[in-house]
Length: 114
Length: 111
Image (cartoon, rainbow over all chains, first blue to last red; front, top):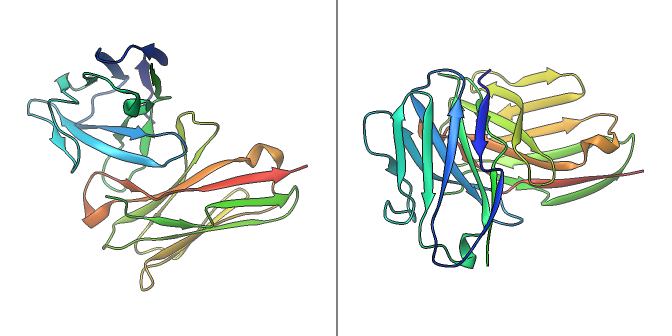
């Protein structure tokens, strides 16, 4: 199964700033996924990051707020822009092992906005 | 969109007892997955059950799937303190590559 590394593991940020989260996979994957988990809640899919094309965003999430890069088949970044306290969440990236295979997740980035 | 709905939302049982969590979903699926999350950390994959399977076992875990009722259950037998965690079901909504998570069940094993 894929090994996924996320950086940073946690951060405390000021309101109005932006933070970029990195996700590195130890193998080449077609699709990478970014999720948000608000305190005490389940995971909500933000977007699907495909290499060589723009990310596909889910309803309620926009590129201006959560720009995503996918420069190659092993790496992706998610930026949380112009942060507010409501953005305090755990952000997780994941990859799929293929058709009818489980998804594998990084340990997540715990973000707190003051 | 939230596809799966777990119940109960929270469950406390004595160590050694069995824990059962249920999940319902809305659309057609290729598979359904169960995950565990300890204290807001990363997710650990437990079991994937395909739409043509009815039951699957892994150690102390037993998962059932009823596609006619669009529901699944996760049974943990002989629970241990280390099983205290949140458990989520997730489905490939509309047979897509992305998976959508249910709201989860918070399981607490009492000593």
